[in-house]
Image 1 (cartoon, rainbow, N blue to C red):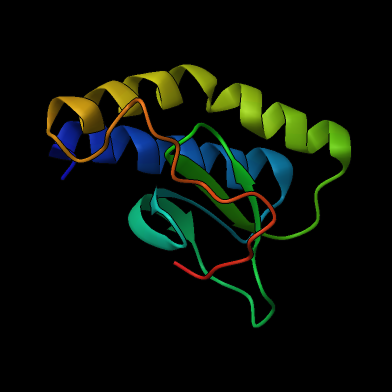
Image 2 (tube, helix red, strand yellow):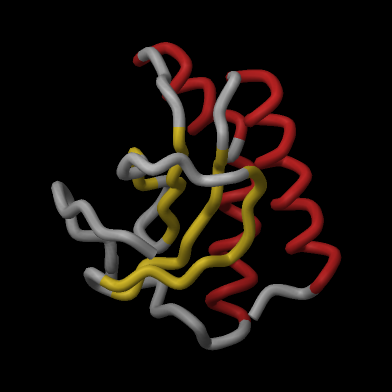
Length: 111
């Protein structure tokens, strides 16, 4: 589990991304194979399926709204440093094995 300050930081980053990119919702999950564990996010979901993108071997970002390819890269870059920090926190708490990736490419899964 993430500590409260880290969770608030992630929520704030997701809120900033929603505001800047015009998204209805952004959230980050921890991947366990095909399963996803919600870590934190911001916004309200739309009735459509969210889009997703792996951030690291164990973290996936989901969003509701339209993003160009350039905006997707911006989203990934904005979460890059935070992603490295989250990976360290999850490994430090025994929540993930850093040597074995768990994100399955091409799988669309709801958290």
